[in-house]
Image 1 (cartoon, rainbow, N blue to C red):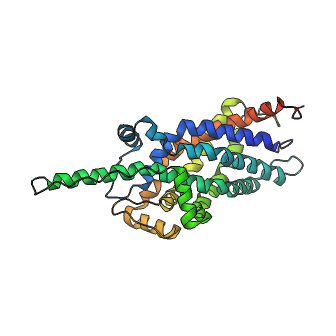
Image 2 (image 1 turned 60 degrees about the horizontal axis):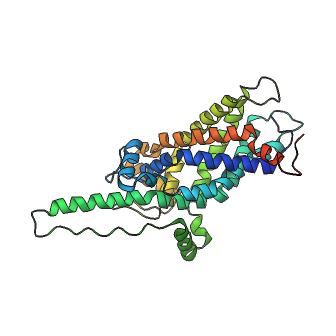
Image 3 (image 1 turned 180 degrees about the vertical axis):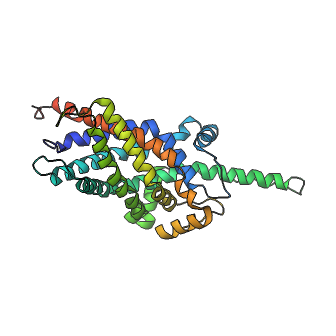
Length: 324
């Protein structure tokens, strides 16, 4: 279904509001996903999502689950806005005379949206991952020190634990990356991000559009509230699981700090090869259910806000933005 008229400011507002609400709701699950994906064999701190969240609360407090959330809350507005607006823009220009888009054109529109969003997504993910994974590295360090102390008991001396380094902020990380590597430092893992986000959008947007259309009572009408929400949830979780292998590789590549005896990677193929060799094919599905639990409500909420038209309503209150 082609849009009657594209109102870019309204779409940007809708995408931004949806992103803020969604991130606030699901960020702890996203933190668990990052920590589970970064675990390598032999250095397992967490056994599951619930185990990760419980241990995070115990060691870092309730707000430890929201480490890195400020980065997401700051950048998710432009990221989601670009993604939703770009998809509508491409759908609008690929449609002819209001005719329904073919599946290929829907996929092309999704591809364009996924390509546009990485401008914001890559640096956002880069900073967020460092902040999210810091707690896992601290927990691993403490566990190894405890094991060393236990093994040293009965010997001459116990091992003295080292002090925990100060946790960096997003601003400090940004400054350090820009100083040492320039703008390219913030775009480390760009290729992996593209390989995740472009296929995601190719799957998500056509699937959502077709599922959402099932709720149309007549051509051109909006689907009911619950249909848009469920279509967003189903399409989002399906696309998320489908591209999870690329998300695992992206997370590993963008992690600047490594735990003890953890592999380092020179690029996408090297990372994929080492994961397959050392951890097996199942490692590519690490955090898949977490990612599905994050993406489903995130995109469900996004599509509801988008289709309810909060942006249009807000703009309608402003002089010079009256709707017919």
